[in-house]
Length: 115
Image (cartoon, rainbow, N blue to C red):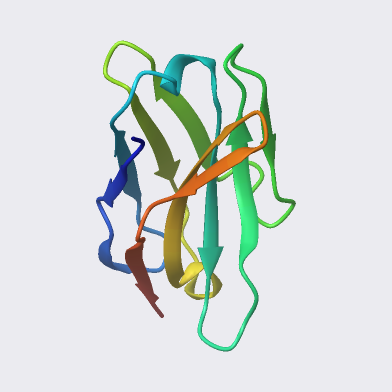
């Protein structure tokens, strides 16, 4: 059984920072590809960042230079450090775990960035 629980969302002013966390259960975290996705009202879910079990990362162009994805395999936890937040970053952020063909999702945490 794999469960993912996001936390750390909230209200922040433009230019501020937040750190999101994704706590996972199960025993496959350390060998899984992890990612952060986000979905704003009326828009499709988009990929924000991913990180492999080897530590390789990829970022959406819209967040490059501002967001950093990381993982702590000892704690089975994924993080997203968000700096220089913009109003367009407002969305529900979801944690994902990919293991082979299996895909798991958390329920999301809301990030609201005010002007």
